[in-house]
Length: 278
Image (cartoon, rainbow, N blue to C red; front, top):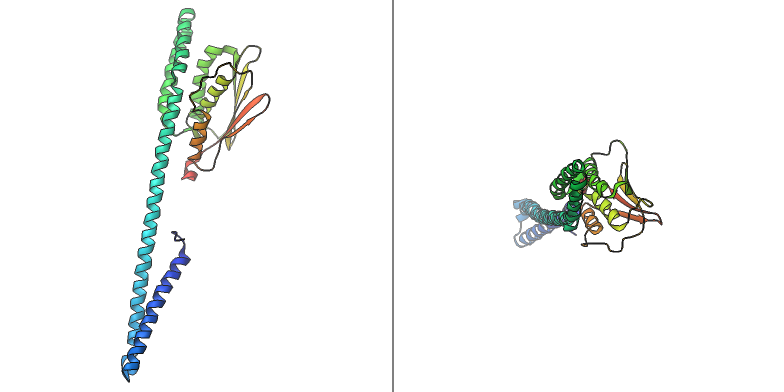
């Protein structure tokens, strides 16, 4: 009921306290005048005037103290909630980073590098450099809550270089980016996470290649992939889309939208504007 900014309630409290104290002063003066004949003329209503002034001061002090206490309580509540949100962000970022640096991903990447060293040393060197660059960005950008779309696309480009070595023409990446959106922000590694999900849940082949399309407009990024047949076993550590949804909840009412047709899987990622989420 008592909230900072509700001026009508504070005005009502002020008038109520002032009225009660003024009424008490009037009653006291009436009783004094009734007991002492002729005191009205001598006092000239001085007791009522003094009582009104004292009541005015006391009413102001009581309302000010009440307002300050409530404002402080609300400030403390918001500060505590902000600290809790920051802690949750750090925990979610840690889970995301841990999910990216899985032994499975590292094992497959090193196997690919080993095979390339024996068959194509020049390509192996490029692959290892890209692998190191990829891990550098996972560590650096995975800790940051948000990345610009430009940063996300650079991470995806580097990641897809690794996947191209593994899959070749079995995986096709297409980007449709409208002008003026590269500096808008998304949760860190959000697009790469969706690409990893697409590769994990679909079997790519020359007959049925996996096509992934990234479309960026003024309000959101849409990542969609064609659906092939699922692998027999899908390794999972229980993070992924749930982690992404939880991170979006920390920035307000924006939500990840997931849709699926017979041939395609769509995920819509709204851009995040931190100044509007605080």
